[in-house]
Length: 171
Image (cartoon, rainbow, N blue to C red):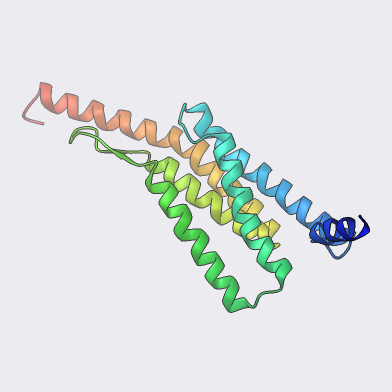
């Protein structure tokens, strides 16, 4: 029985000390929070990839970085891990893009870009670059929440101009 308990303890001893455990927990919680902030806008817009999806993508990307770090891999090997995460997320993003008829065009591009950017933030968090991740989340938040107000007003002005041209062909 003692042999079995020793094996179980050895299998669950990923962390060398308490500080390593705290680092992993804090990074994953930061990734969840930042991913959730970006997913909030998609959720409010009624898109299928919302808060939970963005949280999981961000935490997953961070975890894919944290595990190799714990294993002590080299920088060149970490580069390959990051490339794999980017390729995998690209595949997920492609699934969010739908092509419709000629009038509608492609939809889901902003959601795909948001998921892709969320994974990049997760990678930054996993690498211990939390300040960079927070800054990028803030910038992405501006793009998702503030820019639409400006683009809507530009679109309205554009449609008013085209309606005026249709009413008066000399314009």
